[in-house]
Every structure is written in C-alpha cells, then in structure tokens.
Length: 360
Image (tube, rainbow, N blue to C red; front, side, top):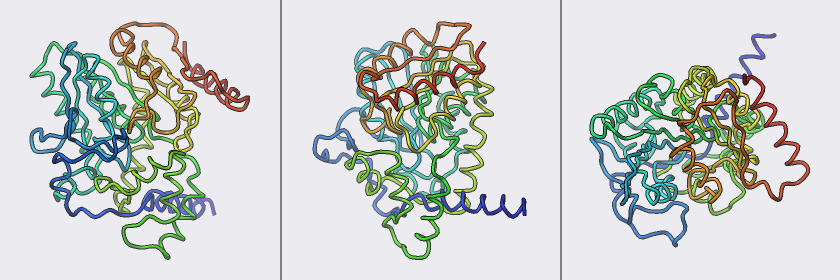
C-alpha cells in the first residue's frame, strides 16, 4: 500500500507538470526575434524593436544589451518555465541604464530556436552546460568584468545549479522564487486528468489556466503567458519527468553555494512555496547571503516588467556593492511592505523566522 501510494503521487505529479498548459506550434518561429512592432507600449511581451534586442550569439538566439556607460559588469539571465529570454527586456533596460551589460538566454525547449531538432525539448541539464560555456566565453572576452547569474522560477533553479557546479565562473547569484516546491500540485493534477480526456490541440484547458492564475492575478500577463507564440507551455512525459528530477535537487545544490547569493521572493507567490524558498535560503552556506522579500510581489518579480522601483534599486545596490560584503549573519530585507494586511504581516514574520533558521 505504501508503494502504491507513492506511485499514485508520482503519477499525479507527472500529470501536473506534463499538462501545465496548452501546446504551442513551432511554426513561424524562425523569425520570432526579427524586429516587430511593439504590442501596445506595454512592458509585457515587449518585442525586439529596440535595445535590449534579440540577436544570434554563436548558433542560438539570445537577448542582449550593452550599456552606454559600462560599469564592467555583466549579467546572464535565465527565464522561468513557459517563457523565453524576451521576458527580461524590461529589467534589461533598467540594468543597462545603470551600467550593467547582459544576456538573456533561452532554455532548451523554449524561444525561437525550439524549431530546431536539437533544441526542441526542455533540457535543463544541457542548458546548464550551455550557460557555463557562455560564462567561459564572457570571461575570455571581458576578463576584468564582474559576472552575475540571474534566474527566476525554473531559471532560479538553473542559476543555483550552474553556480554550484561552476563557482569560478560567477561573482554572485540572484535567484527569484527558485523552482523547488510547487503549491497546489494535487489539485492541478486532478484538473490535468480531466484536461487529458476532454481538451486537445493548442488551447490550454483547466490545468493550464489554473497554473497561470496561481502565478499572477494580472489578466494581461496571464493572457500573454498563454498565447505568445514564443512560449512553450506543454511538456511531454519525458520532459516533465526530467524537469521534476532537476528541480527536486535545487536545495541540494543550494547547500553547495559558497558565492554571494541574493534570493528574492514575492510574498504573494501562489505557485512556488515562499516558505520552501525561505528554507532553501537558510540552507545556503555562503557567508554573503541576502533574502529580499517583495511585499507586493507575486510569482514573477524580475520578468515581464513586474519589478518595482524599490526592488530594482535594491538589486542594483547588491550587484554594485552588496555582493562583496561578507557577514556572519544572513540578511533579511523587505521592500513594498507599507500596506500589508494582518494576514500578510504574519506570513512575512514566518518567512523571516524560516530564513534565519540555520544561520550562524
């Protein structure tokens, strides 16, 4: 009975991820990064008509920006599940204005290159190798630059593993809501079974929409996430299995991080467990680690224009000076906490305690 229960839980978990959201055709992806008109001036889904722009670096598409007043710093940004590198355009503009160059990479299986056979499937392990190679090239071309990894959700899990396996290639890591423990998995899995039998084609059913609405209350962002042709939102069984195995190890890799780390978490995140992220933060052994909580943040706080001015200001401060300061105590900070409800204040207090649980 024990083994049967574990098997059922595993199957539900697989269905949850495999049925995240509807499939998207790979047709017309070859020119996805070609210049296009802006949607409507919105930062959500901003097209590549201006810097940052989508370019081909080596043999793959990336988002790239160059600061007009470089401060000898560069970031490599990794997007969340279902999105693409273009999600970092708004943050890239902010970083560029403050002297920080950068790249946004497309995880294998996402973005315009997923029409190519070798990049059609989600492959987190190979993406780790891709980003490590990019980091090595950055060091060769700009040996005197400070290099930071930035990742959100799935990208946060990738950033943690890349930094743990290649500590000499990064000066600091910024990870937002790193994928590890997902909320409401069983409920969404049940919807996924229903979706499997009654929904087909490219349009998402109940499971997909439930996940998106866990991630955001913004209808414009939800619609963009579901409909943008550069997004891939349905995983095969094999992709789902490898993805779950990959993120299950996130905390184990976090325990190997000796480099400076800034962990960012939206207090209102309903997709990745904020408490699990606080626990992960407490497990990081680095002598320079900061837990930054956004009181008004949802799941996304770095991508698709969701970054608030106070959060961006703190992010810039950390990259420019905070990453180099060592401390015997973990730092826990909060932004946008002026109008929290009593319930939110209690949640915030719990996160503070969890974040400090294993600190010296």
